[in-house]
Length: 155
Image (cartoon, rainbow, N blue to C red; front, side, top):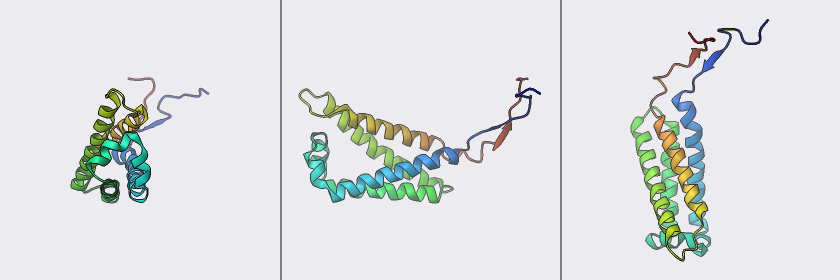
């Protein structure tokens, strides 16, 4: 008896909400953690050379509050995933904030004499990638079938 028989397996196709909900959950925790850290430890961020420009624009508590608001929006988009308006608003605001910080980190990194490390730019680039991946799967959970038969050999 062969181990692989034609038609013996079923290929599970990930649905949009299966892919995006863990990513949204993780980004909610990241945004919430960053918000709490910025509010409770503003002096720590003031000592880091990478955050100088960011903290000149707004104080750490204001940035922390904005990150907490975005975390709440992402949490609301997880809870009410069928409300497309909340999903779009949450991801748009989150991407705008992360992209702004990424632009500031990259600009500061390429400036001559900068003490900024590339780690911040890479971290925020990963956040942009995760948010983009999460946003790209929104609203497609009803468009994809749950299971497709894996036909082997291919017809």
